[in-house]
Length: 360
Ligand SMILES: O=C(O)C(=O)C[C@]1(C(=O)O)C=C[C@@H](O)C=C1
Image (tube, rainbow, N blue to C red; front, side, top):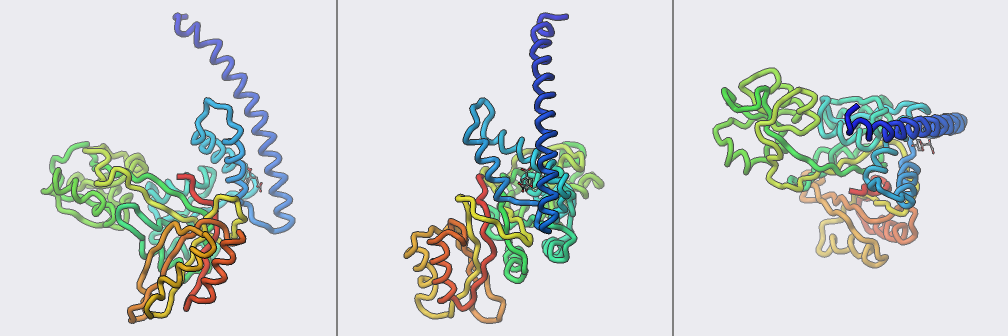
């Protein structure tokens, strides 16, 4: 045995013994979750409880003695609870496919890996899958930090009976990918229109000769690049791994801090956790000071606004729907008061959901 092996052997024995103890405890935890599942089954109540999962992670982070980092605690328990939840009933999660999209990564980041993924061909299909009950929840992109709102998602949220029960913020890094790892013989770069826009400066500077072709998703671009040596794709890590491509250049997005916010849609109203957000859609009659009147109840009750987005109301007139995210849960007293006032002055009012805020 080498000197290194001699020193590693007792440490590894210690890790093996600790792992056996952790497994014993995880087994007991899984059995407790199974019992929880039986109780819920008796009341026909939902398996997935985002507010409880948030509480579990926050409590452990608050008593964490170190050296594990808070993000590490969150990642470990995300998978522990995903595996325990699957023993109660494995959840089917719809997302914008194909496999290898950032939407799939967002779904796994939020629900862990013990889920059944249901890749859908469009955002409309994600909503339909959840509305029809083919999936318990759906994950859809709603906003990118460089490109702004995903307008189709906003329009679908407006019309859907589903509510928002969570949010995920993912850092988005795009790479230029080919089968060979170089641009020899490559004529065209394919990507989703949003990704082409997010990388346009880099492309103009470093690969102006490539024809830019928008396709339905970056994962689809990666699939095309894997099949055709004349095609390069712009896509992220999940698609690079799925389609076994090589990076010609990494992190080519023009904004180094590029992030996308996804929301979880479903038929579940979350309880308050103390770190919540409420999403609303409103419209006001087209008259002077109307938008200001929408903001007044928030200021009056000390409710802060995290986001404000407008979309044409699609009625052929110059009218708009305002999508606003406010801090707090609809059951919080000051939020409830502000919402009541908003409801009374708005020409149109819809609550999209109250849910725990993403830590990112
Ligand atoms: O507490 C519950 O309701 C559970 O079902 C247990 C548990 C867990 O593993 O801690 C699993 C699934 C829920 O989403 C929340 C928590």
